[in-house]
Amino acid sequence: HTTYPWYTNIQPIGLWMQWHVNDGKKELNFSEFKTNTPKRQKHKFEEISEVIEEDEMPLWSYTLIHSETKLSVEQKTILTNWAKQSFDKMAVQVRVRIGKSFFYRHGCNSLRPNEALQRSTALSSRSAYLASLKLIPEV
Image (cartoon, rainbow, N blue to C red):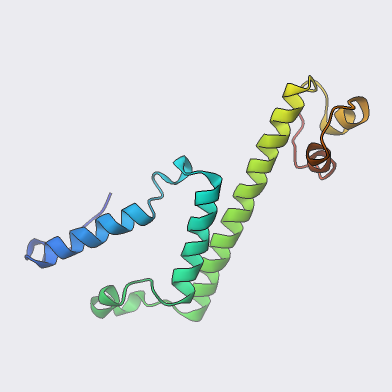
Protein backbone atom coordinates (compact mmCIF):
# COMPACT_ATOMS: atom_id res chain seq x y z
CA HIS A 1 0.00 0.00 0.00
CA THR A 2 1.40 3.38 -0.99
CA THR A 3 0.69 6.58 0.92
CA TYR A 4 0.92 9.63 -1.31
CA PRO A 5 1.80 13.17 -0.18
CA TRP A 6 -0.62 16.07 -0.69
CA TYR A 7 1.17 17.41 -3.77
CA THR A 8 0.25 14.35 -5.82
CA ASN A 9 -3.15 16.03 -6.21
CA ILE A 10 -1.46 18.65 -8.42
CA GLN A 11 -1.24 17.57 -12.05
CA PRO A 12 0.99 16.65 -13.85
CA ILE A 13 3.00 15.95 -10.66
CA GLY A 14 0.46 13.32 -9.58
CA LEU A 15 0.66 11.48 -12.90
CA TRP A 16 4.46 11.59 -12.85
CA MET A 17 4.60 10.23 -9.29
CA GLN A 18 2.04 7.52 -10.05
CA TRP A 19 4.19 6.41 -12.98
CA HIS A 20 7.27 6.28 -10.70
CA VAL A 21 5.43 4.26 -8.05
CA ASN A 22 4.01 1.80 -10.59
CA ASP A 23 7.42 1.42 -12.23
CA GLY A 24 9.06 0.85 -8.84
CA LYS A 25 6.52 -1.80 -7.85
CA LYS A 26 7.04 -3.52 -11.19
CA GLU A 27 10.78 -3.62 -10.52
CA LEU A 28 10.62 -4.67 -6.86
CA ASN A 29 7.49 -5.52 -4.93
CA PHE A 30 8.15 -7.28 -1.62
CA SER A 31 4.46 -8.23 -1.38
CA GLU A 32 5.01 -10.53 -4.38
CA PHE A 33 8.70 -11.31 -3.89
CA LYS A 34 8.29 -14.96 -2.87
CA THR A 35 6.43 -15.73 -6.09
CA ASN A 36 9.66 -15.13 -8.04
CA THR A 37 12.01 -17.97 -8.88
CA PRO A 38 15.15 -18.23 -6.71
CA LYS A 39 17.20 -17.06 -9.71
CA ARG A 40 15.06 -13.92 -10.07
CA GLN A 41 15.15 -13.30 -6.31
CA LYS A 42 18.96 -13.52 -6.40
CA HIS A 43 19.00 -11.04 -9.27
CA LYS A 44 16.75 -8.64 -7.34
CA PHE A 45 19.00 -8.77 -4.28
CA GLU A 46 22.00 -8.06 -6.53
CA GLU A 47 20.12 -5.12 -8.10
CA ILE A 48 19.31 -3.71 -4.65
CA SER A 49 23.02 -3.60 -3.82
CA GLU A 50 23.92 -2.21 -7.23
CA VAL A 51 21.48 0.72 -7.23
CA ILE A 52 22.47 1.66 -3.69
CA GLU A 53 26.21 1.48 -4.37
CA GLU A 54 25.83 3.54 -7.57
CA ASP A 55 23.68 6.20 -5.84
CA GLU A 56 20.70 5.47 -8.08
CA MET A 57 18.41 5.08 -5.07
CA PRO A 58 16.79 6.95 -3.61
CA LEU A 59 16.03 8.85 -6.80
CA TRP A 60 17.66 12.28 -7.05
CA SER A 61 14.23 13.76 -7.80
CA TYR A 62 12.98 12.39 -4.47
CA THR A 63 15.95 13.70 -2.51
CA LEU A 64 15.35 17.22 -3.90
CA ILE A 65 12.29 17.52 -1.68
CA HIS A 66 13.33 14.98 0.97
CA SER A 67 17.03 15.70 1.50
CA GLU A 68 17.02 13.67 4.73
CA THR A 69 16.55 10.51 2.66
CA LYS A 70 20.04 10.65 1.16
CA LEU A 71 21.94 7.59 2.34
CA SER A 72 25.13 7.84 4.34
CA VAL A 73 28.04 5.48 3.67
CA GLU A 74 27.08 3.54 6.80
CA GLN A 75 23.44 3.21 5.69
CA LYS A 76 24.55 2.04 2.25
CA THR A 77 26.76 -0.61 3.87
CA ILE A 78 23.91 -1.78 6.10
CA LEU A 79 21.52 -2.09 3.15
CA THR A 80 23.96 -3.85 0.84
CA ASN A 81 24.94 -6.27 3.62
CA TRP A 82 21.25 -6.93 4.29
CA ALA A 83 20.67 -7.73 0.60
CA LYS A 84 23.60 -10.15 0.51
CA GLN A 85 22.66 -11.84 3.80
CA SER A 86 19.03 -12.15 2.71
CA PHE A 87 20.06 -13.93 -0.47
CA ASP A 88 22.51 -16.18 1.38
CA LYS A 89 19.79 -17.14 3.87
CA MET A 90 17.33 -17.81 1.06
CA ALA A 91 19.90 -19.96 -0.78
CA VAL A 92 20.43 -22.13 2.31
CA GLN A 93 16.67 -22.58 2.71
CA VAL A 94 16.39 -23.70 -0.92
CA ARG A 95 19.23 -26.20 -0.44
CA VAL A 96 17.58 -27.51 2.74
CA ARG A 97 14.27 -28.02 0.93
CA ILE A 98 16.08 -29.87 -1.87
CA GLY A 99 17.92 -32.04 0.64
CA LYS A 100 14.79 -32.81 2.68
CA SER A 101 12.82 -33.80 -0.40
CA PHE A 102 15.66 -36.16 -1.35
CA PHE A 103 15.45 -37.86 2.06
CA TYR A 104 11.69 -38.27 1.75
CA ARG A 105 11.92 -39.67 -1.79
CA HIS A 106 14.44 -42.28 -0.66
CA GLY A 107 12.45 -43.52 2.34
CA CYS A 108 14.66 -41.90 4.94
CA ASN A 109 11.96 -39.69 6.45
CA SER A 110 11.99 -41.56 9.78
CA LEU A 111 15.76 -41.26 10.16
CA ARG A 112 17.93 -38.39 11.23
CA PRO A 113 20.05 -37.16 8.31
CA ASN A 114 23.30 -38.58 9.72
CA GLU A 115 21.66 -41.99 10.32
CA ALA A 116 20.28 -41.87 6.80
CA LEU A 117 23.77 -41.22 5.50
CA GLN A 118 25.03 -44.34 7.21
CA ARG A 119 22.10 -46.58 6.21
CA SER A 120 21.29 -45.46 2.69
CA THR A 121 23.53 -46.04 -0.29
CA ALA A 122 21.19 -44.05 -2.52
CA LEU A 123 22.13 -40.62 -1.18
CA SER A 124 23.53 -38.20 -3.71
CA SER A 125 26.72 -36.34 -2.92
CA ARG A 126 24.76 -33.06 -2.66
CA SER A 127 22.36 -34.42 -0.06
CA ALA A 128 25.19 -36.14 1.77
CA TYR A 129 27.08 -32.87 1.88
CA LEU A 130 24.04 -30.96 3.17
CA ALA A 131 23.36 -33.59 5.80
CA SER A 132 26.97 -33.61 6.97
CA LEU A 133 26.77 -29.84 7.44
CA LYS A 134 23.59 -30.42 9.43
CA LEU A 135 21.69 -28.02 7.18
CA ILE A 136 18.86 -30.50 7.02
CA PRO A 137 16.90 -30.47 10.29
CA GLU A 138 15.85 -33.66 12.02
CA VAL A 139 12.68 -35.09 10.56
